[in-house]
Amino acid sequence: MRSLSLTLVLALLSYSCSSQQERFSSEDELPKSEASHFLGNTTDFEKALSRADTSRGLKSLLVLKNDTLIFEKYFDGHSSRKNYHVRSVTKSFISLLTGIALDQGLITNLDESIAPYLSEYTPRKNRKKLQGITIKHLLTMTTGYEWNEGSANGYIDWDRSEDRIDYVLKRDLAETPGKRFNYNSGTAHLMSVVLEKKIGQPLMTFAKKNLLDPLGIRMDDVNYQSDRRDFVNGGAGLQLRARDMAKIGIMVANNGVYNEKRVVSENWIKQSFEPYASFPGQATVGEETVYTSGYGHLWWLLNIAGNEGALAWGWGGQFILVVPELDVIIITQNDWFVMDDINRRQIRSTFRVMAGILNSLEPDN
Image (cartoon, rainbow, N blue to C red; front, top):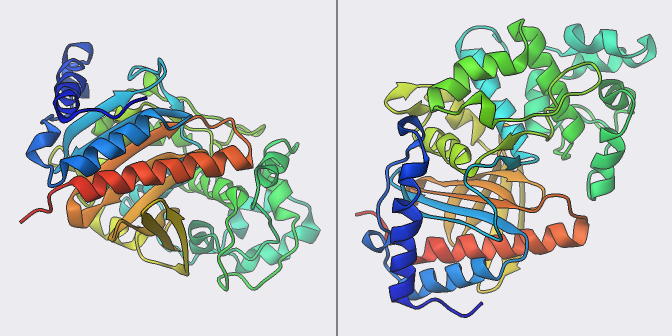
């Protein structure tokens, strides 16, 4: 698609923000403003939007500045009304619920062993190694289990297993728990199981009351997957609308507060963005370099376009990007039912779009 002129960009912004208003209930509304009020470099913004238009697989792009929606667009017939798979963004959702449970005293110690909550789901021979694995290890992907999720097949094999809990628990320990980060959707699922055991009620019942309702997210707009034991898949499977992802981003960016009401403690947000695992790596995306600097409590930490940020990151390019120093939130949804090469292409393309947007915005004084 050809590049957008500045006039068309501004017209599109006005339409994309104002025309949505009549289609949403008052509780669904997000404050809106025109992007032109916040732009420091219109050329970079135009380039970013042009890249978005030509990014294969992109479904939605939302940009918020100072908790205000300044750009919103859906691509290739996708809709603001529909929820889409957010894949591993689910992990960050589980992290927020864990923080709420900790705030309420339902979890009292992140260094507590997970053995009392999971031993019943695996043969006796697998139980001893559970003693040294803690809730903290689940949150930071440092359980030590032998695991390879470097490709889609690593997740698919676990997802298709007869018993997703035992599939993880019967794995050998390759390292001492707490020693090294190893990305593992299976242990994120264990966190979901442990969390439900700790709160003493169905996880999504707890989520509705304590997270979704306070953010104005309707349960009818949320889907999720469960395993054969009826535990919510903590590794992936959540489906959300882009605007509801934005509400989560706003709450996180405001240290746990949404609409002047506390949802999760500021202390938990800060803990979640601490780099419990550090592994500086980089990927050049066009003119920009993106560094994945570490991993917190089921949130990625990164540097993008020279800005530190926290990222809920789902397969295919499902992103909630929070950049505190710019007070910017970017939401993207992409096709998710893709294999490794398409996944990498979509992520690379989406990072380029996000970096261009960040470069275009005027820093706050």
